[in-house]
Length: 228
Image 1 (tube, rainbow, N blue to C red):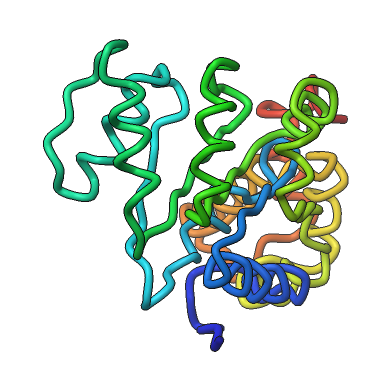
Image 2: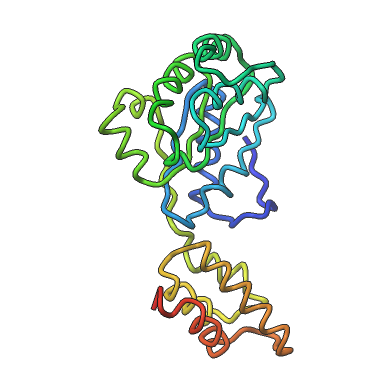
């Protein structure tokens, strides 16, 4: 399985390895749990999963079990009415289908009553890629260890500072990158937002590079009280 390094994503070895692992699992009819704290790039990682031989079905984690099962069938171009009385019928139909896999972001928002249905789907060799906070694994270990045993857990960690230095080397000085990283305490979403704000401010000031003084100027009013 090839990986396009020109995609709009950090060229991180761990994530490249994880992506290959996901492809191996879903092509084998097996499921995955992608775990990471807020801002660690779970959603962006999910966006990279684009198998050529399987159709992607994305689900809304806030839906109840009736809506989720109906949504799977809708994505596969089947008519399905979300209904408590049709839940069993929808589940049986889903488990008889093939050629697709399911992605569920923010799995920590799932209704607890839906997990037994996912177990049936997983056991039908329909791959599901869950992504969520560490508490998803904690919950499954406590309430559904049988489901957790069916999942390969991939833990996303913050992308190292050196990767961002390489990404932003034409716009932000290395010491400024390091200061932003330390100030945001590993929150990748906040980190990238501050980097973007710094670059925009540098353009306004007609500066070629963001130095540490400009970085501190942007950091202080925006995140000092939360992160420093």
